[in-house]
Length: 463
Image 1 (tube, rainbow, N blue to C red):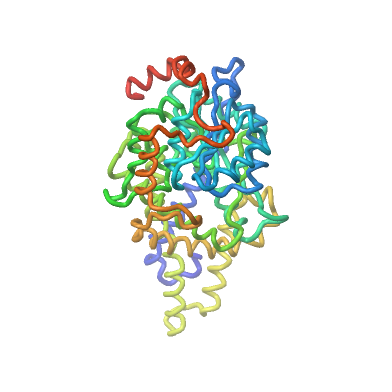
Image 2 (tube, rainbow, N blue to C red):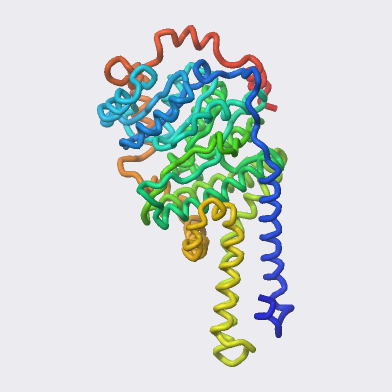
C-alpha cells in the first residue's frame, strides 16, 4: 500500500494512520479477549436453577424448532418456562408446550403481538429470583444455567449475557448464515474484551440474558420499558435488550458476559437476503441506544469508559471504512488521466490483495474452527461496504420502528392500550388447560423470594 502512494506519500499519511489505529485497537481487543476469563462455578451456589430460575420466552410464530430449544433449556432444570404469545396463537403454542413438558411450561397471552409487553407479562407472572429471557430458537448447552447463574454470586451484578454461535437452518450454512457467523465471532471478541477491560458491554443480547427479578419488577422499569419513545413520539418495540442494558448501567448494576463453551448458545439466522432486514433493524436500535447512552444519559462515560469508546468508534466506523475505496477510485481516475505512476489494474489488484489479507486476519478466530468458510471472505468484504452505507441510511431513518422481518407485529401504542385494558379487567392471559396465570402459591412465594442482599443494594440505588 505504501508503494501505491510513493509519489505523494504525505497526502495519504492521515489515512495510513487511520488504518494503523484500527488494527492497533483490534489487536488490543484480541489480547484482552484472550486474557478474559468467565466466572467459574461456585462450590456452594446461592442460586439453584430448580428453585430460582424462570425462563421467559416471548414469541408469535414458534415452530418445531421450539421443541429442540425447549428441551435444551429443560436440561438445566429451571423451575418454570413461561411462553408469552398473542391470543390467536394460544392453541398452537399450547400444543407445542404440551408436546415438550406441560408441567413446567406455561403459555400466557397478550391481546396483540408486542415483544416488550410480552416480556412484561412474563415478568409479572414470575416468582423466582432470576429471570432468563430467551429466543424461541436459542439452543443451550447442558451447562448454560449453572454458568449464567455464577456471576450473580456478586450481589452487584444485575444482568448476565452469553456468547453465541450460528445454528444452520439446513444441512450446511448459506452465505448469509456464514456472514452472520463472522459477525458473531467478532462480537464475541468485542464483548469478552470489553468485559475484561472495564466490565461494560454495549448490549446484553436478547437471544439469552439473565436478570435479577427485583430489578425488572420495579414499577419504574416496567413503565419506562413499555413507554419507550424515540424523540418523544416514535413508540419502540424492538431494542428491548438495548434498553435493559442501559437500565443496568443507569441504575448502578454491573453486568457480565459468560463467554465460554459452557455458556455458548446456538441460534438460527435468516438463511436468505432477509438477514439484511435483521441487520437493518439491529443497526437502527444500535444508533438509538448508543446516542442515548453517550449524549443523553451519559452514565457510561464514568462507569465503563472503554465501552463508551467502542460506542464512539462505531459512530465513525462507516465513514472511515469508506475512505479506502474512495481513495482507490481517486487514484484510478488520476492514473487514467496519466497523472499517477501506476496503471489502474495495479492499483485495483493491490487494494484487493490488501483487503483479502487484512480481513482474513480479522476472521482468523472463526476460520480456525471453520476453515471452509474462507471462500466467503470476499462476500464479507462486500458486506462490510454495504453495511457502512446501510448504517448511514439507518441513521437517517431512525423514525422507522417496525420489526422488519416478522409479520403480525403491530403498533406498540395500540398493543399497550389493549394490554392495559386486559389488566384492568383482571385478566392474566391464562393459557388453556389451567396452564396460565400465576401459581397458586404465588403470594406466598412473593413474600419469601428475592435475595435480601440484592434487595438492599437495589434500595441504595445500585451504587
